[in-house]
View 1 (cartoon, rainbow, N blue to C red):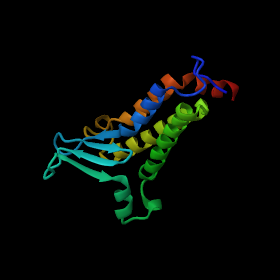
View 2: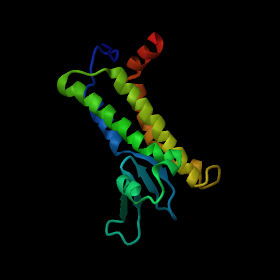
View 3: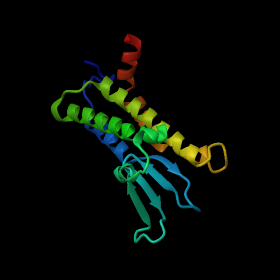
View 4: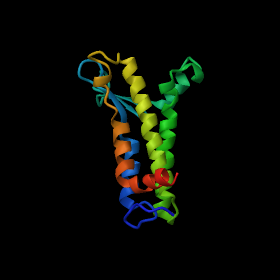
Length: 171
């Protein structure tokens, strides 16, 4: 059984809270029209400052995006196809940490590894979004912020680094 360096063999309530909070962070913040950004979340697109919206926010869920997409899933850009995978990695990491808190059974290496995979998948989505916004131009990659990937990798590195290090060192 692995530990986090503090003697804990499972995630703490605080670690579970932080891992679950990652589900609410946007994967990327993309420039919108004018000063109104689009938040690309694990659950869909959130357009801030949307005209005609009573709250100034327009939400387009990811399942609606895939259900109304005229192209087949396989013909979509790879960064769009990996979007549900990023969501799945985040969800399974949350379930893993939750099992540690709820029933005292968790492999912290799995939780940390899932967070690293979630960060990589989120980064892939953010890079794809940047490409659609004209990467390399004034409105491209520098303007698309990969918030989710940075936050997820930070949580994996800070909370699960000892467990992940054990995997790399012991192979």
